[in-house]
Amino acid sequence: MPKSRELTVFEHGMIIGLHKGKHNATDIQKILGINRTTCIAIINKFENDGLTEPLPRSGRPPLLTEREERTLVRVTKDNRKESLEEITELFNSLGLTQISTRTAGRVLHNHNFLAVLGRENPLFPKTTE
Image (cartoon, rainbow, N blue to C red; front, top):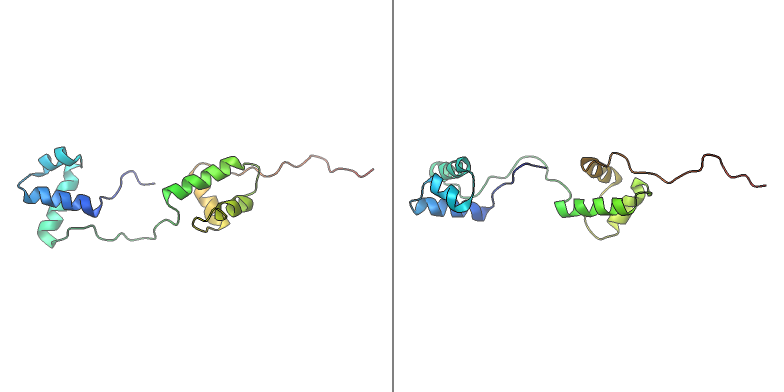
């Protein structure tokens, strides 16, 4: 996950509005609590290019939101003895974003679930005597 987040369109507008109200980047930093260099970059984009909102990012957005990832982790913790396929079916039955087993494994790996415990098997097969 990213260390910082992208500012919203509203936050960009607040920075530009304060700039138009004759505030400098240091004042805007103190008022909004946003990094000074970020304020300067937004003001420069506005003055040079007329941009008031961030440009779209390149790359594919993640399939699951942070909330859905937390739900998948919770389902996994509740069903530690189930296989990855069964955990994926349980998650998909909740009515959230439908995911594949591979996506579930990748998300769980990012949350330090390096392996999902399978069912316990006896060491010796049962004999029918």
